[in-house]
Length: 431
Image 1: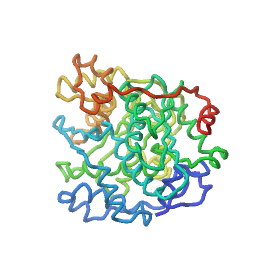
Image 2 (image 1 turned 45 degrees about the vertical axis):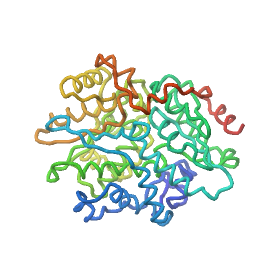
Image 3 (image 1 turned 180 degrees about the vertical axis):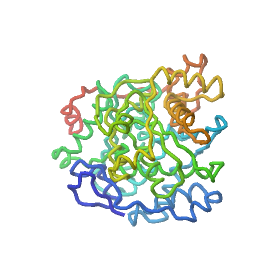
């Protein structure tokens, strides 16, 4: 399997090169030259297959011959060694809980897979690899955890000051060792733009061995397909595929789901559940794609005004808007609606959701109300404790602390403050 740049001005590369580069030299995102079909026996036998077997068979075509089968089995096994339960919430709605990993967020899957792939690829390198990543919340903690003490890898994480939750900030700033956190006085879009400039800077390319761990990296993006297959294994009504609602910010997660669907995974429809950052909902209505400055909301990990991965979604659907509209809807949920959704889920259905999951649930609820007879699930992408400062005042009680969060409370924050100016990042990286 080779990967081409979506800017079409760089040579195609294999999975190893795409993982190490992160972004193509022409600043384009890498995309697989072909989308493999899911083996029919995988879907037919999915009830009897282990999660490890499912994940291995899904990802194997994408890695090609860059990783031996024994190594890929190890990487997959270490990536998914926690639960992915599909939990009933109401008669027509389930939730796929993706917060049972080490940092309590869905991004653990991609970060763990990528860190192990990159560790394998650079194990014989003399020059250390610098992983440069921007985060709007959960990516930072997942990447920090996934890459902590990986030999030959340094991690630099940019995050917007005051715009991530207190638990998220602790998760990405308290590791030390090979993990560095840069606190930027700006928005996530500022952080992401600074990272993109770094990858396009010829001076840095000469001096440093740079790669990215954002969802723009194929090794972060592609394994997110796993849990859509895990959900299908658990889906109770195989005769009626689900409607899937995905809380969406940078659109890497839902893009992986759409890729799985294009490969043959049964899905009735997808919903991109967005907050007030409604670029994609507006595009699907008007056909006019207009990035704007990100707006701060309660579901802060989705505060993205120019989602990087949407260009991959367009590629999946060959830039045919009518085809995309048949498969994907996008619904914008306000903060006021998010608060009401958290409260209703807790009081009526006895389910405690984080703000992003609440957006996913309400978008699905609205869609199913207009499509009676259909059923679906929403992705609960993070444990509500990561947003306890938002959730607790809404439900009027404390969110129980998992052991992994309790251990964070006594750890010291370590971060370096930067203005949202690229030259400051460049000077830091070269220092």
